Image (cartoon, rainbow, N blue to C red; front, side):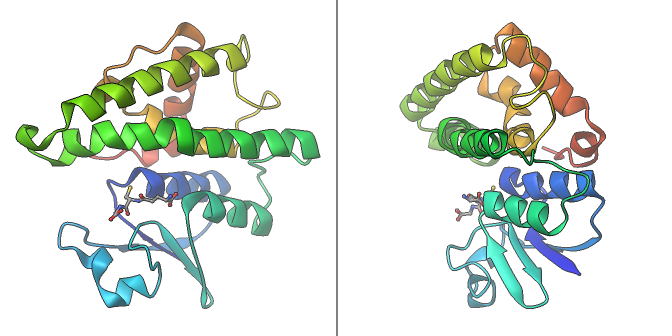
Length: 202
Ligand SMILES: N[C@@H](CCC(=O)N[C@@H](CS)C(=O)NCC(=O)O)C(=O)O
């Protein structure tokens, strides 16, 4: 049985929750009390030496880094498929997963972490403005990549969309206006039952 060490407000954890839901994988959730700094306890650092969530555990096998976990789930539970079998399309999914981390997830964290969890006097306004510009530019790239298609790769929902969902959820908090194709894609992503069932409380 899979055990997922996670936090209910964690964007990266939510990627894994979405994949578990999409694939109907039975699992057990272990909440890491991050407010109480439990992710820094030696007991948790034994799972993930970087002290981050999510971390997955199955029969003594431990894996962290959400994209690695998603790829593991896809490899071990290929149905229903969240990645195409064609090597070029699969490579494109990998590319979008990586770019999501670099161009979207990272700058999103710079804005939403303080806005969700820190008092305003601790916000770094300049860094947040730079992050917002970066996201704005990235959404323009996504707009061209999407064109008139519903999904990023091969006309099917894939791990690329799983990776983006928790982050595009926060576009209103980021205060970036998505261009039209991206806005329609975001709506499509957030309407999926797996997205609705894993929606964070804050
Ligand atoms: N690259 C990691 C990022 C995970 C991550 O940053 N998780 C956040 C919660 S959303 C966390 O655990 N932060 C605690 C910390 O960095 O101390 C992944 O994809 O799993």
